[in-house]
Image (cartoon, rainbow, N blue to C red; front, side, top):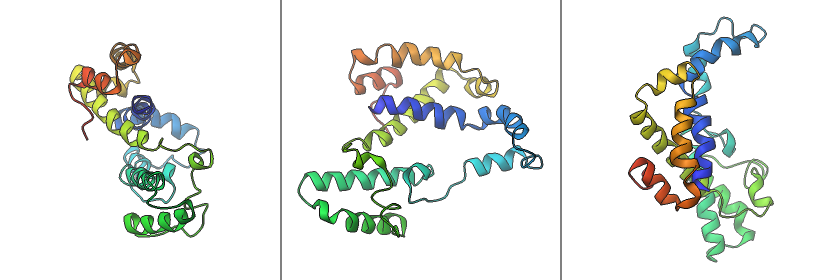
Amino acid sequence: MGIHESQSLFWESHVVSSRAFLKKLYPKIQSVSDGYLDEVSFEDFYVYYNYITQSLIRIEGDELSYPLHIIIRYEIERDLFNGVMSFDDLESVWNAKYQEYFGKAPSTSKEGFMEDIHWSEAMFGYFPTYLIGRIYASQIESELKKRLPNFDELLLEHNVAPALEILRENIYAPASLHTTTETIQNFTGSKLDS
């Protein structure tokens, strides 16, 4: 699941959110903004698009705080299933961890431990794949930039075909033949490496 998550996160965070990709896309974004972005420079748009700000909601978390959401969920799941805490303690432990990691606790359950659908759908043990996927996505981008020194120039032209071909050959096609560690190591030359 870490490799699976790495691909959505690679395309979302390392391609579509990249300066190069957005630079070409920005005039199209401006053209459908009903004039709201006419006076906004690309640089201002890019800074706003990648603005760093904490959020108590995981999917609204920035690149710095998002991993903390995953770590908190992992720690809680680990403690629940190891009998260190009970389900009755979930909300109070959640709030205490958010106070510790973010400096503020949620004011409601909806903003707190019920803000994500995974647990209400009994999907436990899944959250770490998001953080592992983010790390793999970074490793994959780093390797792609070695193999495609013109990676940013390709993104500026929205030409993802060379990167996609390399991923098909090295990640997609052989992934079911190897373990996750073997897949990432065969492509990047190293295991999971933050």
